Length: 360
Image (cartoon, rainbow, N blue to C red; front, side, top):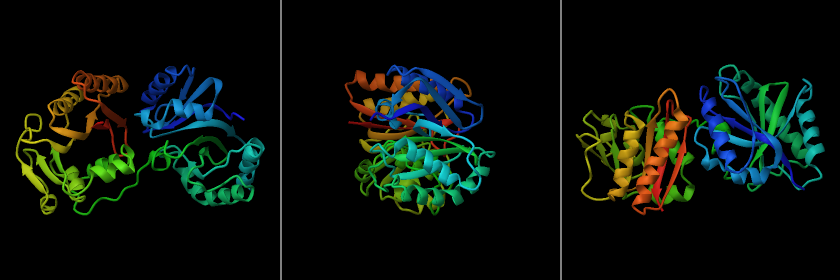
């Protein structure tokens, strides 16, 4: 039996709803998935309602999570449940899901109770912490919750405690954290919160196998625009040797690792004498100029992989991202360099996106 999705639901940073909408339209248009965007400014949510329902597994295969930039999380929207009774919300949701799916092979691997990342919607979060265990118990009792790593995740999105939207995602095709919100601890000795952007990028943009093979002792990294050294520290704590390039000062805690060499130079003009394993860059500059710099490092054979930030303009942010993507791809394609590029507006990003680029 084909289970039909009525659309897609995306979480995002408040204020970026129009970028997610443009992205959804572009991605779905490629696969002839027509529909309408529904969103409110600063709501941190976007709904894409299909003109015709679509098989949910085929839908998610067509627009995999790795293709999204501005969506922190996305799932196939299967339906909505309104007028939940105050005394037994878990029972009402379970009854609805049993009625829909008990006679199908579908069983859920886990449940994600979600809310929009806004101050207003966070009032629901306390309710959900208390509610989630009751719902899991009810679903387990009815045989709907399998607790298997290979089974789909059930997403329940609450804008109030009295109603929810529900949908599905597949393991490995979703954000590594609920709603894409990465709650990370500041590393010991970190000189600034920007270090968390790179820490999040390692998990959000790279697979476990990629991390194991490329973030290991003995490899070499370059950090352009390094001061005060938060990104250099991420590499040093994993045993990599780092050339931290910046005319500004580095924090003593970073230099104390013994793995970071401070190179006082301009990040746009300095180049290493030999090829390095990593080049990272978090410089505040026009995104097209940063994109051109990154492309130059790759086409001249100076690095194997990179993570970098693109600081976006206040308007036409989606268009700027596509412009930079095209610029980098064109340069590398012209040189016959096969590459993989993943982009994401991370939880710790603000007016910027983070990009992972590697040769393949």
